[in-house]
Image 1: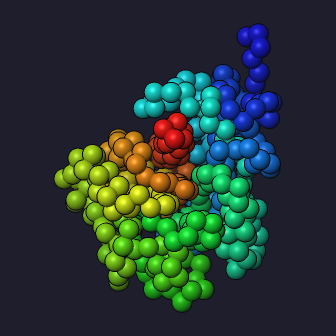
Image 2: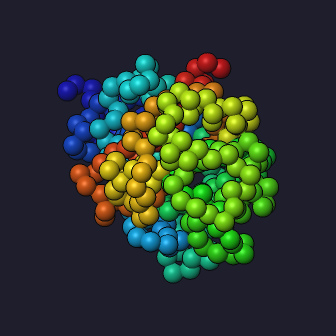
Amino acid sequence: MAGKTIDNAFTARALAGSAYEPTYAGALSFMRRKYSKSVKGADAVVWGVPFDAAVTNRPGARFGPQAIRRASAIMDNDAQYPFADEFLQTLKVVDYGDCLLDSGNHNRTPAIIEREAAKLIRDGAFLLTLGGDHFVTWPILKAHAAQYGPLSLVQFDAHQDTWDDDGKRIDHGSFVLRAVREGVVDPETSIQIGIRTHAPTDCGITILHGYDVEEMRAAEIAEAIVARTGGRRTYVTFDIDCLDPAFAPGTGTPVAGGPSSARMLSVLRLLGGLDMVGADVVEVAPAYDHADITAIVASNIAMYYLGLLAARRTRG
């Protein structure tokens, strides 16, 4: 045990490097990364947005960031499958903690999230968000578009999230419509994967429905995503209800007939060709989970984002 420490979230001396502490003990940051309110020098910043006042069915996604961090504790010491390299040895990652929101004044929430996100990406760090319900993606998208220009959107979801919105609603089912209307997202280079519900409009976004995903190989899905985005700057959002409830019961609006976690992780693995500038995983509601299986897959999705980022940086 010589030279080893515990509570790497606080004792780490550098932003890169593995923790090598027991998976069942110690402070729970995301993948044991150092907790810090300074993101200087970081390649990637992980933060939580514990907000679920926009849900239209079961609440509880405000507890998502905690659950995802807890499930990630097992991921650190070894090279993370399927990435060949132990990428945390070189990728500098900070866990910034959570966004502080006023639980009694939801009208302030969008501006608070957008302002904080803008601060975190100002120096070019990759922002990985743990939700929270899907409304939180809206202000985060705005912050990224202000930094990078209009974005391509890759959305893994059972829902299109294009319901009518007067521009003032706090609603997790309309952020895509708003993003297209306000020029934050380019619908001609955007794609949704796993859709299993109807909405009033598709906004011109390509859709791979649940039945399409069921019949396609993972490589075909990934090829469709890379072709649609066409090398443009892309934001990836993963609503955990994209997965079938058998693989992700811990969510607010589950829809039967979705893909497995293995299928979607295989798709993510093949997205190294994306110019991904930011990403999130949202709608994890641990109160409805069983044995943390939803939180576990969500933590793996978040880890895959970091692995793809590290691989892209290695390729130059």
